Length: 269
Image 1 (cartoon, rainbow, N blue to C red):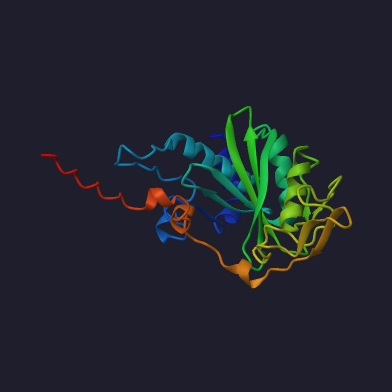
Image 2 (image 1 turned 30 degrees about the vertical axis):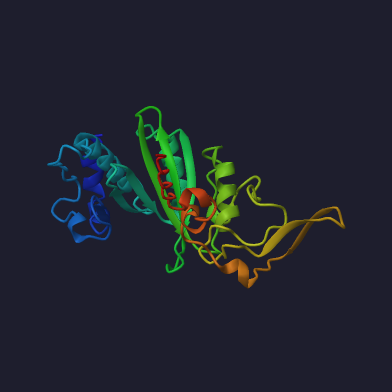
């Protein structure tokens, strides 16, 4: 890696410099986390306290160099390289090049990320592209992990990673079911967690907590009945305390004060 990196950086230096390559070590959004001096070498982290977890600076440097290597090989698709405070490498990719970066991470001999251990998404409605899709990768050859991130909205589909990792089949079905993110080139894109005919996507921020449909068993029809949600006013009063506070009369003898001791008996003369 140390021999290949200077050649690639020299040829693609003009493309890499405008990119935002930084580390997020402390508070997110802090300007102290930005590396302005040397974007090709990560600054070591030294913890003065013995109670905090020590960072493996050599491992962080290797992961950071590999992230720059990926950004150099695929400058058209990789938008940002960042290291989290947990020493995890994150590669932020444009939606149009997600499948190309996946193939690179799977098939390139310097990567060999043969397994996609998990995939999920988050919803931030204030953003223009509200959904952020993440793939957690594992390399058995180098015993390292990396994370691919991309973004999309309600209407723009993403290329499925099923052609690279077969495990993405159920992962992307769950993302489609919970968030409504559509994937192309998926062999069986349908709901996996919710019931048949379910309306909406539960993990979206604009989805109501009680949902749109309620299910109950009808004694007359002898079957399950799906009806629009009716939330009466008396059911909207929530108890924010624990049962030990608002059920304080459950154990009446226990909560009552101790009775006074009986008076002593008079002595017989």
